[in-house]
Length: 176
Image 1 (tube, rainbow, N blue to C red):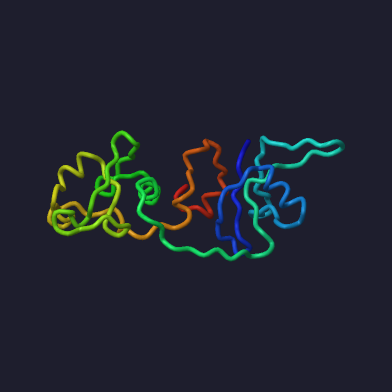
Image 2 (cartoon, rainbow, N blue to C red):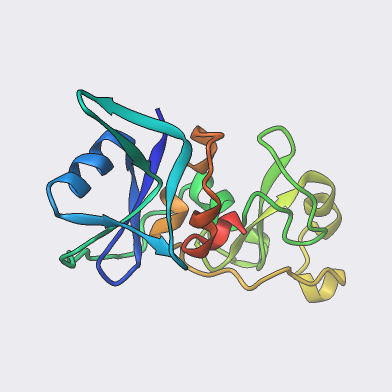
């Protein structure tokens, strides 16, 4: 089973849904398959078969009516921080995984730096050890990007599927 990216009516990503659910939304007229320069965003290698007709499996759909979703930054969680930082060391830019990733406090805890979205970044173990209890400026280790609050995209577990559709990178910066 593949997933589909569900977009709000204003093309803002909401979340992923099962392909069957996406098909039902399109079939009922609640959503449409996104069109990229005359080409529908569908899974080329997937077809739904029904008596008398075959249907394309949507990869990206857009709701026809906008839904309101409130957003407030959540409590601090490691996995979301790592997703926000694209699983890259924010100092040396190395790719990270669960065995070599740590949380670094930009303003060290020993200097009253708290655990928050704007004070923590993903770091590899060697960089975290090298920086120690210094600020990035003091250690001569500039950050890849300034830490910010996460967005709803950072909650999506993009690692759950090896099936990514090329069209998704237009809406999800983490996939670029």
